[in-house]
Length: 358
Image (cartoon, rainbow, N blue to C red):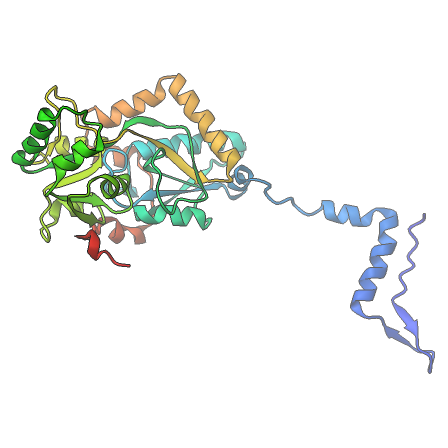
């Protein structure tokens, strides 16, 4: 069929023989019908740039990966941010992992410009909301992947990048630690029995960071305590109203803290010197539940890092080596927006669980 220019855009009137314009919709319909014969409609569609069909393509198209991270420090996974000659920087094991993910994304996207990690520092309890609302591609902050928690619907976890986590406790009062260990020592049951730990902790004022696995454990198992919810671990250290006997949290974070930062506090340890674990946890990268391609991509990367020994090396350099984290932040840290700095240093407050804001 020939592509004749039979564009009948006018029609005669009945009275005057003059012409009037057809309605716009009729004009478009006529042109569409005539163009179909010469393939121009298909050509026009093909000129439109295709949109991203999945989350990996979307990251490549943007040239950025939107990463969430807790604004509260979880040393050595995330350290407090510092000012450097190059601007604001944050460092830690989780930050180095983000850099590995970003480098792998740059290689996958194949662009001449590398993918840039856009770091969003957010309150830990709000990270999950930001991800489900589509404001983040992923987040990482020593998140326990094997802990069931309310409100974490629509999320999924990568394979673990750290599998030696769990909940433990610290105290500034040696008599509190001795009381707990002595009770466990005299008990005929295993320390893994929930009722043993319930009785060992009964009567204590216990602080936890709100929204973490430590809170969920305490609420489920420690019925005889006075539970205090804190906005951050530093807030728990400073709490005087009420004063806290014991802080529960991530064992790797607590262990690092009492060895390097708060040396006047003690990690709960059994008679053989090993830490007292209340649970075992592993930490993973969090994505949207439907981000299957991104999650597979991260899992493949974690496998290669683990098989090559690089993941073990990353864990050792952050958890075991002696170093000054400001120096590492200055040389290898990631930047974030300056307007987030006041929030980063706001450690928040503590309150009794029964008096939490609704």
